[in-house]
Length: 173
Ligand SMILES: Nc1nc2c(ncn2[C@@H]2O[C@H](COP(=O)(O)OP(=O)(O)O)[C@@H](O)[C@H]2O)c(=O)[nH]1
Ligand SMILES: [Mg+2]
Image (cartoon, rainbow, N blue to C red; front, side, top):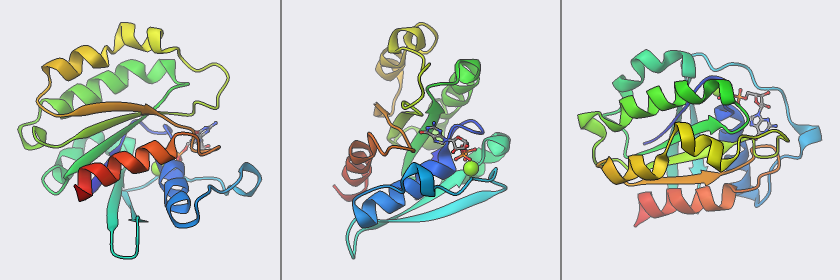
């Protein structure tokens, strides 16, 4: 099971739908045809089809459920932490949520991918700004898990190919 977590509104539901679409059709739903998302209550399950026989179940855990995310850690073998690159006000919340996960005994061998979503937004934080508050390189050096970072837009689909590659690598090899 792949867990998809992150603060509310970071784009997890949109990301799941677009990644699923991208894997099955090779492209994303264009902006004009996107249906509005509704805040996730409980969890959302998405099946990602890499090929007819290679599928991955991804479970989105809503940001408001953060206090009970840990209930799902045991069943997870990879984690995507999705953050809003346009959300400077949520950056310290990201830091706290992420640090709590990285220091959990049950997750010490689970690979993490940190995804900065919404890179299509004009006023995104710069990598330098983020690094001052959340130095992921330094954190990765001290953490037990493998941690990677990628950028994407769940509107344009930019970056989804690399994310799909990461999922494939951690689940099928
Ligand atoms: N501009 C932009 N908006 C996005 C992106 N991803 C999600 N959104 C929007 O952000 C809002 C919250 O998205 P949602 O998927 O419900 O967030 P969740 O709470 O993490 O599941 C919605 O209005 C989405 O359309 C993105 O990459 N770029
Ligand atoms: Mg959601």
